Length: 487
Image 1 (spheres, rainbow, N blue to C red):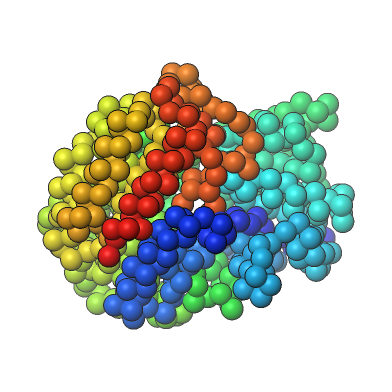
Image 2 (image 1 turned 90 degrees about the horizontal axis):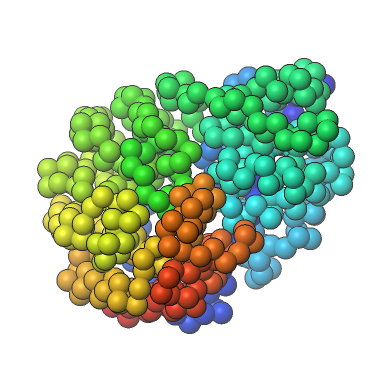
């Protein structure tokens, strides 16, 4: 049997800005600010700002591992298809487009398929799997990604179109599943010996195998296969490079920290080697350092910046961190090493909310961190969340007041205003009562954050004092404040 593997990223529908005046004004203002950065730094990749396409790095890592083991690969990113349809036909992608795209895939690639999804595009992952099964009912479909890692049981019980769920880090798991399939077919006995998978047994019950150990040496993983990205959108792509996996914090609303758990770092030299390779081979200049918290190790950050400076790389980069880890010395060094934008989580102006969600920081620390970033000459992007546990009218007003203050004092350049969404895997989703919130729906189509052109809708939860409509109204008010005050 020819070892062909099809890798699929389901679409993440973008919102239609013309529908909402406030959202449109908000994103247009942020686009203008992002274009300023593009012009200032003479960037050629990631040039569409908030419209930039960020490929699924996890799926591209899996692709690299399969490629290393001799598998033939085909990669379909339906977010790219959606982008193309919008540009050529002025409408969003639909089910007919998905069926047409899959119908054009060579039949010999519809025997073993890997799909990666988040919660909000899970429905489209199922639609894609069903379409593939309608063409080849014997095709084995494996679902990976953050959603399946927590909802594997519900997935396998609710749809027959997905055969296996890969849980957690997928690089080693997917290679072992592929080796099993191409060596022995869908052998349940052999599948049960592979760690971190879930599947249906012959009697229909769900089998969950023992958890796989995390990959300790991240530098043994090949570079993600960015060469699979369609050439016509290369300039629109935001290239993500990681220095670590995991997080030492435990914020109750965060999903990724629940998957990767303990921090593991790559060698500084290997990370900068990767940056240099992309820069010199592809001419890419802009990179997103895709760690949950770039400053989680101060010494590592120092070594990383010094290595870039030593090599005199002509690159610029973006990262995110916690406010309590920022200091004057590191921000100045980051600026010298090419950092042009730091993303910091402010979340709320209410200390009780920050404490309840395990942020382990304060509003004063946030303000001081923001000022240090700005004083270093680095642009600042801040995260704000409305509807967190214990949110009240007073706390929401206080957060909007603080946001306005930061804008008036020119402390921040960009905002990332969202509504709290208790995704599967988070403490909020697992224990809503203990967190004083009420989940209103399990329809994953509604699990939007309301940010990054990913779409927006009513929150799927409410607090003891605020209804979903009131949370949405405060979020809209925050967008209006930014649209009216960000210069």
